[in-house]
Amino acid sequence: MVITRQITLDTRGNGDIADITGEVAEAVAASEITIGTVTVFIAGSTAGVTTVEYEPGLVADLQELWERVAPSDIEYQHNRRWHDGNGHSHVRASLLGASLTVPFEKKSLILGTWQQIVVVDFDNRARSRQVILQIIGDN
Image (cartoon, rainbow, N blue to C red):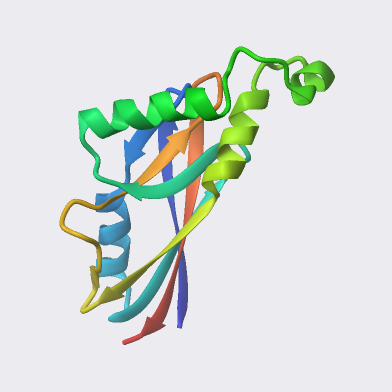
């Protein structure tokens, strides 16, 4: 069985990290599926999805990491073409990835003790983001 759900969230951009673990867990618990996997997919090319220990120190570390890996203040071909200043956002999102798959059993996500599911918005402005959940399994 496959069930598709959607989460809408407003983000601030510029590396904003939003914990969506609760929303994903609620969607799985509300489904008719007892055991399986949930794929979490962010629609858009300037955001990504991953798991982290969602605490202020690590959030700051991640934001600093992205600036070291794909700096916002260097020249990007994307910016030359579109003049929107978010070339770094696309590069960062490509490195992180747009989806994540999490197993669940007895309608509960199987995550580590300190592991949360997060959306990272790399764009250079606030956005309304759509996260698609595909819940797949058996009852």
